[in-house]
Image (cartoon, rainbow, N blue to C red; front, side, top):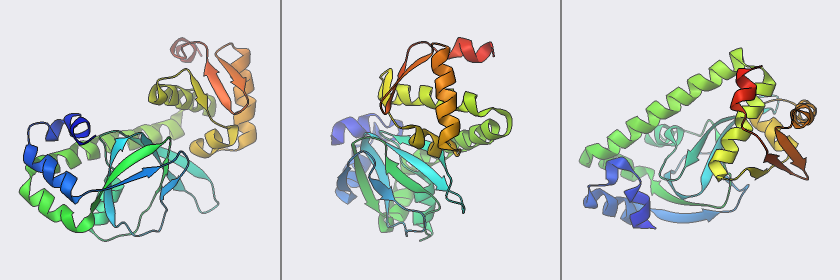
Length: 219
């Protein structure tokens, strides 16, 4: 797992020393689908690097509604956790295993030395920060300018790409939580999308039958 993981991270490919240091510092943990990895308000004690699987990062409003911020995929870390860990701060988001996931946790007290001793580790953080910043801009654009049905289609498409499968196991409630809307709204829209022949609904699952791009362009 060590070799495969670090081979997939551009900044760590050519440095055997940093790969060994990261591995020596890490504690490996495995989470089942749906497990809470980090809760809002919890102190951040270590920084995750995803070895296998994926994690969704959510934000909860005061009224209990949630919204999906981004996914952390294999080889990636959480910028919010890195920033919080460096400043001994609490988490402003919660992280949930999207599927069975294996994570390397690097203690906070090792971060400063990694950044100081290995410029490639800092480059890794900057690259992730740039990616997350672009994703946040996309979220703002989606909420401000896109209708909920378009956001729903894009979320389904993103999940099929994540799982590399045209069928995803998910409830209407879960989709609603990730979009920050009501379940009844999602159920109504899914039924309409099914009538267009784009998807087939099953018990807690959705099968994509056609590509969404043409439909979205012609709306």
